[in-house]
Amino acid sequence: MTETKAWDTYSQQKPDRRPVNASGDTTWFNWTQYPDHGPGAEVLGVRPGSAVLELGCGKGGNLAHLATLGAHAVGVDVSLDQIKAAGARWPDMQMTLHRTEATRFLEETGASFDSVFSVFGAVWFTDPAVLLPAIRRRLRPGGVLAFSQRPPIEGCYGCQASYINRSEDQDPLIVKRWDYEPDRWVELLTEHGFASPTARILPAPPGPRKVGTLLVRAHG
Image (cartoon, rainbow, N blue to C red):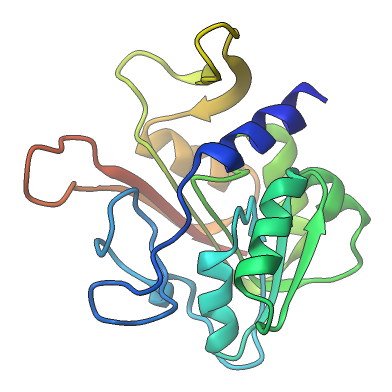
């Protein structure tokens, strides 16, 4: 219950995606926390007819873009507010949205996927010892797992507390997140049977920003 409340609160605080990006596109894919920066959907190797699953789909912007590429797009989020916002923003997109927790969906679904991905989403906020095996079972041979999140703070690895602020007279809500250096993510993916894992930190765009984005990719 606390986790659901936290992500509903986050949904209400997070601004909606812009109507168009810098190129004038109405849908686009963005792995980083910065607009119009970094690689796009090519990381997933999606083709028309590909079955793709987003864990922690939020308001559905990235998933909607994959739907325009002809993918069979499935999104999962624990927040009903996020799912409702995604449906309202993209009513005509061929997307299937589920309000549930990521590991529960992976355990209960009978579907398999060509790509599974998470952008500052459920992979960051779920114990990898539980989530990675569940993903591996649902990823088709040769399929792609990719996820992005903030790089870890030096010396702060493993399970960490993440705070979602509320009003001044309310304590912040706390959720757990899992932070590891790139080399450790490679080790974890290898330990759980993934092939050719890579992990790198994408530099922030020019300007005063200093925090890059951790991007991890592997094959089933």
